[in-house]
Figure 1 (cartoon, rainbow, N blue to C red):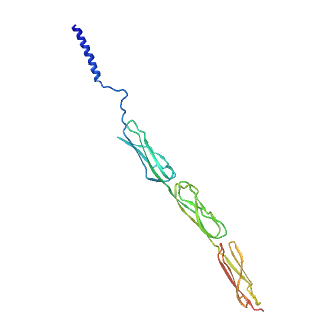
Figure 2: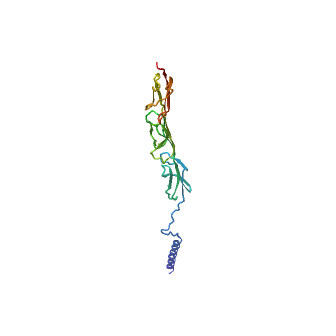
Figure 3: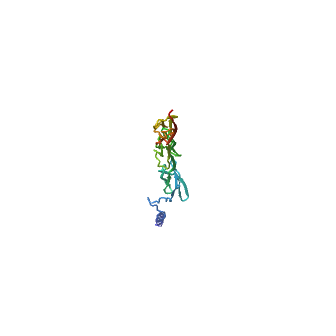
Length: 262
């Protein structure tokens, strides 16, 4: 009887001890483990306020990402960064096991480039020919811009401005226009009066002279005006050309003698 009681007591103690140990162990709830916390990051894109158009894609910006204990450079992607206007720079950090993702962007201006366009011109005296003006020129640029004169040529006497005409797209440029000038002045005319050296008095007005005017593309007779051309003595013959669009005024005179009848 005593031995049986002792065995039962030992078994009871073993069972109770096991139970107490089980109750003292930590309990792990299935499916409720906490995910590791990611630290916040900041992506910063830095750009100059503006750049000038240069015919190429502009890439003036830098980007960094910072977080607790780290900082690194990022690649920058661009939009609308070739032509004059507002461009955008973007950068993003995809994150990792300890750092949260972030992104940033910034804008910068692409200013039009200055370009000077100068028309040609011409200056001369009327010669009956049509003259093409000197070439229209375009200052340094990135797009092979070219220009033409308007008008392109002129032949008659006159003068005015010559405007440079450019057919290319100039939206990426701030254009300074210099007009040209053309000027053609009248050519000289030469009036000539030709008379006999002498004539014999006959009681009537003597008209022994002729007159012509000559010049570039000009050759025509003129009316002769006489003074003292009736009586014996020295007479004078005059002629005048009043000029025209392409020729100047000119005049001439000469004398002849009216002699006594033999």
